[in-house]
Length: 211
Image 1 (cartoon, rainbow, N blue to C red):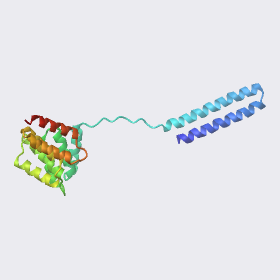
Image 2 (image 1 turned 90 degrees about the vertical axis):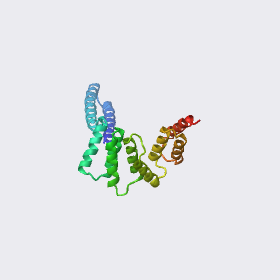
Image 3 (image 1 turned 45 degrees about the horizontal axis):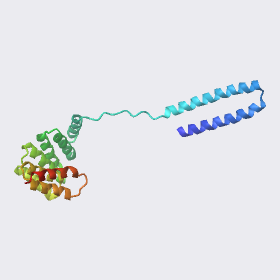
Image 4 (image 1 turned 30 degrees about the vertical axis):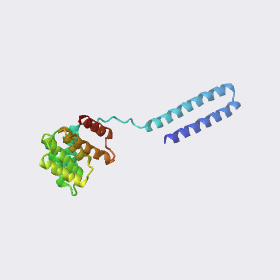
C-alpha cells in the first residue's frame, strides 16, 4: 500500500511538472507566476495527503515485554495443573523449576507424578527423580536413588544426567578414577548439547588429585 501511494504521488508530480512547463511557454509572465503559485499549492496538498496515508500505515512500535519471574512461571504451571492435574509434561516442568529453587522435596513429588502419569515414562524422568532424591538426602546415593539410576541407564546407557550424577558422587568421595570413567562416557556419547569444555575441565581436575 505504501509503495502504491508513493508511485501515484510520483506520477502526479511528474504530470504536474510537464503540464506546468507546457503552459508556461504559452502564458505571460504574470499568468505564469500565478500558475506557479497554484501548482505549489497543488503539490503541497498532494504531499500532505500522501504523508497522511503513509503515516497511518507505519507499523506500531513494538512494546518491550518484561520477562516473567520464576515465581510467575511456577504460578502459571500450578494453575495449569489445577485445570488439568493429569498433565505429566507440566508436572515435569514444574519439578525442574523446583530444582532451580533448591526445593528438592517438591521437585521429587513433581517428578514422581510425571512418571506415574506418563503412558511411556522415559529415561530423563527417572534421571530427574534420582537427582532430586539424591539432593533430598544430602547428596547420598540411597538404594532408591540407585534403583532409579539403574532404570535410567538401562533405558539410556549414555543419559547425561545420570552419568553426571554418578561421576560427581565419585568425585566428592575421592574416587577420582571412577569419576573420570563416567565423565568419559558422556564425552564418548558424542551427543549434542553436552558441555564438553566443562566436562574436560572436571576430568583434568580429577586427574590432578590422582597421585
